[in-house]
Amino acid sequence: MNIILLSGGSGKRLWPLSNEVRSKQFIKIFKNNDGSYSSMVQRVYKQITKVDLNANITIATAKTQVSSIRNQLGDNVNISVEPYRRDTFPAIALATTYLHDVKGVADNEPVIVCPVDPYVNDDFFESIQKLDELVRQGNANLTLMGIEPTYPSEKYGYIIPNSKDNVSYVSTFKEKPIEKVAIEYIKKGALWNAGVFAFRMDYLLNISHQLIDFTDYNDLFHKYEGLDKISFDYAVVEKEESIQVLRYSGEWKDLGTWNTLTEAMDEPIIGNAIMDDTCSNTHILNELEIPILAMGLKNIVVSASADGILVSDKVRSAHIKPFVEKIEDVVRYAEKSWGKYEVIDIEDTSITVKVVMKPGEHMSYHSHSCRDEFWTVVSGSGFVVLDGKKQEIKTGSTISMPAGMKHTVFATTELTMIEVQVGKDINVHDKIKYELN
Image 1 (cartoon, rainbow, N blue to C red):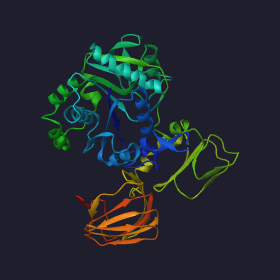
Image 2 (tube, one colour):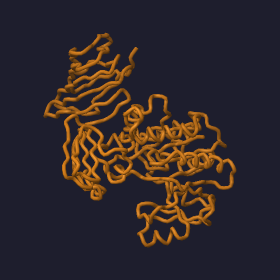
Image 3 (cartoon, rainbow, N blue to C red):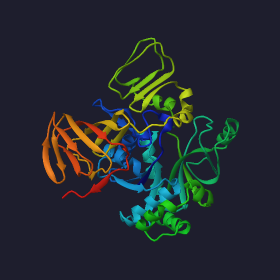
Image 4 (tube, helix red, strand yellow):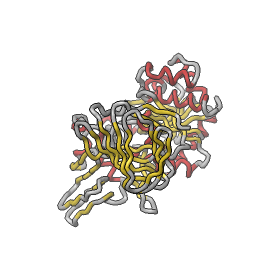
């Protein structure tokens, strides 16, 4: 089956572990058998391939998230990169065109669109397979998955089906209601709208060409900046008359706040922390190397990263977004395809960064116009290329790169370095990339 996973968002509700380049789907909270942790995107990707080993998975995402995806899923995952944020319809149109023009998916093939971060069991993706079968049967232009509500939520839109059958045609859609209205919807057999859509390839391509003037994938990609921001619901779903919905009654959660996220954690502590026995319903997630000690806390979440520290009542934590928007600071932690970095000091004319590279990975070959850089190897080994000349490095090695020097580094083992950037105008846009022969 062909699956497009929508990966978006800036993750302000899960600050400080999420930021502009690391959304909630990249936070590692699910413990594996070997003691390591997986993120939501890693969990979902594994679940899909468990149900369908040959699934053709494409992740539609903004260019700011590409490095995190490569870091967590590897270099072989298909990615449809949105050069600008334009909401779900342009993203799905671009990803569908990518599947058709770049990956060679046929016009009559089903395509399924799903958020990248639902907290579900494997049977959810078994139901996703049923969507593929329903599209092939051709009884409707659009097939949705609806979640059987467990309570009258005000957070989700509702699908009103014609019947309570497992598969039913859709009567109408309702926006997020107040609780009293939601209760009435549920009595009529209404379903939560999970944002899961399925259709034939040519169906969505035809609509995309009707709404957007483009010839092929490359043309659409280069015109993307000028597209209107519009949701898939508004552009397609609300205007389509031939829609059916498949009921899903298994576990489904949106882990969009600290309260819901901690409910999915297997243990109360991740990272360097201690809680005494007077704490209850309290969770700590600590990415810093320094320890956290908690005593006498009840219904509290404590979260610490290089970007900041949150201490909040769990229910109140759902309201942090407007406060986080007031915090003006550079992103201090990010995952890259080659590893990760953490900003550890910012001065007027310098920035100090801890860089950890994965074995066998390397940075791009690049230079900077407005800053000098200095690397000190803390642990590991590898080699650098400076203006075309190769030089071995190991623990204790120091490398100086004046502005304008082309440079890159290759990690033979896991490689940890301290990078000091020095200059009056240090910014992320000061970077020129080159081909390395």
